[in-house]
Image (cartoon, rainbow, N blue to C red; front, side, top):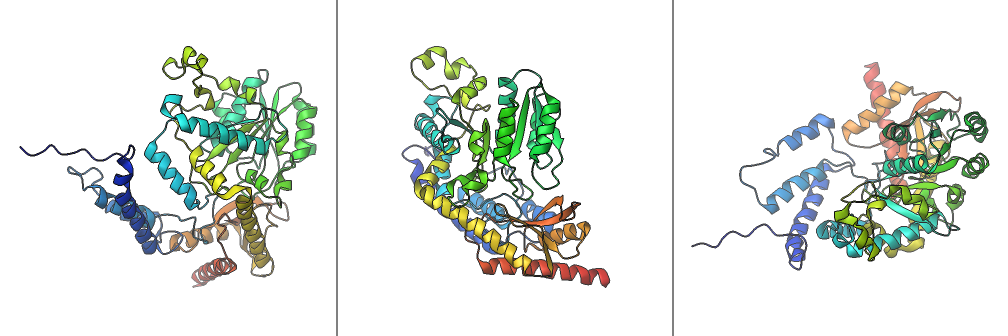
Length: 474
């Protein structure tokens, strides 16, 4: 009688590493092959071409499996070939960073071991590691606080939603949110999800909240409980609101202050740039996002607070996870650490990165990206064929061909995307004349980007603009 077939190997346990090792070779080879076939920052041909490539992988669920090696080779290769690769210097559209190799390696261990941070008995070491690491990051943001704390989130959107939720729970009923037109769209969605009135949105013609208009509105809202929602690094231009002045106003009017520092928060690591986020420590809650200017694989968000007691409204009981007698006996209660139940140990990659690079190493990466963005701005300012929106505050540079209208800028961006030669974002912000306009956006998050990469990127934009002009006049 033939032996019964063995089930497919698992990733964990003592045998897991042996099972993973040959598969990792296959995965890495497939990634390299896919990137070579793509040969650029984006697959050429647009959505239809990419969809046609993945359609070749039918059937999705075959009657009999292909086995691990062919499945990994085919699908990982297809994903790599069809990827928008943030490690390519010409892929600079979004706050979408190239992750550090050390962080990605740590994330593999998190996936293989699969701790779930909803009860201590599913994640003993991950629980302790998260507590230590979040405490250290909270102290970085709130250095003068006695009991700062931080929660791990999926990113800036969840962190902002939690900041609004805490304000609703900790302030009297009738919360109003006061934000600028430059604020992240998640604040509007947070108000909707939480059953609050729509935020009061103040115009930001200069790209940042004006303290005078905030003061006027706070006086008009009195005595309604208010959350002032400020931004340290907008998604459009990287602009930073005047945080110290806004903190003064919030304190003066008894308002709560939340700062969305998903982009700019990691400037705290840099002695050169941390003064740009002065006032961050005075916030009642702060959103951070280390899969932006932190070089982590998504997801890697945090919400920090200067007083751990402020997190009490998130407390929740489920006897099979945090029974009272277990908690009284010393088992950590994790349900109040998130609105999610099952939660992967995203803290591991963050902790490994912090330990591997240290403050100096992270400061160097921040400084490199900011310096490269300034260099790009210099190149644009010196070239009469381009219009520069303004000097970068962090690492985002807005520009467009001189004399190009909104429709031309938008079409030029799509032309580059379809060719697969460059991935630039778009932003609609006021220009020097105060009128909103469409600009190309380059967000420098790759610390390996060189001067030659910047020059070749601008050459691609010039050539695409010239080709469009020729097509128009033909």
